[in-house]
Image 1 (cartoon, rainbow, N blue to C red):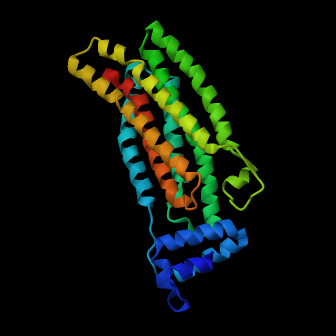
Image 2 (cartoon, rainbow, N blue to C red; image 1 turned 60 degrees about the vertical axis):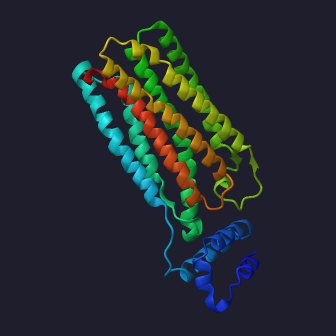
Image 3 (tube, rainbow, N blue to C red; image 1 turned 135 degrees about the horizontal axis):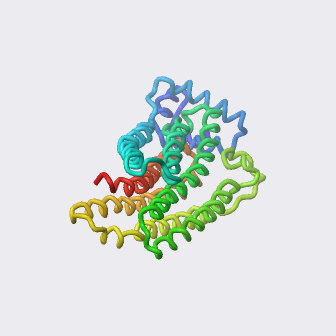
Length: 314
């Protein structure tokens, strides 16, 4: 397939570098060929040869997308979290369970995206050993992401228990607090054990494996996540609108809570990219979309979990 790919592009041995290194489509085809046809040792050799041939050519990178979104999210979210903690210290004289949950989610989110460093370049421009390590981290991050997301949602629900005394809201909130961890545990296990042996998830050369339909898992979890987001968003709206505060402050609160609707959209977009990622041969490039939208979704969850606690400051 390597010879056929070069022949189809009209490449010859005298001008191999300019033919190969400036043609991303050709590189993608060769990478897929090597990943599906060669042993791991041969992949290492092929990667080193490509690196040497194309050393003087610029390499595409999307790393700036991950960095920009992460920095922007931190700039927006962490001042809000700081105000949240200040509000708790000033008016409640201490922290409660949801405050610690929010802090844990924020810290874990930073670790998640720090671990994703290395994403953004084409897989074939990265040393094979490094690429395999990155794919392992991406697999681990996909599991951590699911745990973090439910932590963010539970932080919001714990806020509801503290500020809304209405029995109906409290009953529904408790039901969700019991249901969400169970659902997340099931889907986390399905994701973690999507293939046996597990190593075959990041090592495509392992063909003797058994896998579940991960696309079905992604779709069903994505739909449930959207339903959860909508339920959590709608649950307190009536009470917020009926709060005995000035109209402009009420509108501000409703507007802030509406950020949750954007989280629903990001969840849908992320689901689309996650399904495409399951069949990609350029994981370190295509995975950027998942990392970026996961970051946006997580930051939205943190905002929604923190904003209600700012009510004394409004």
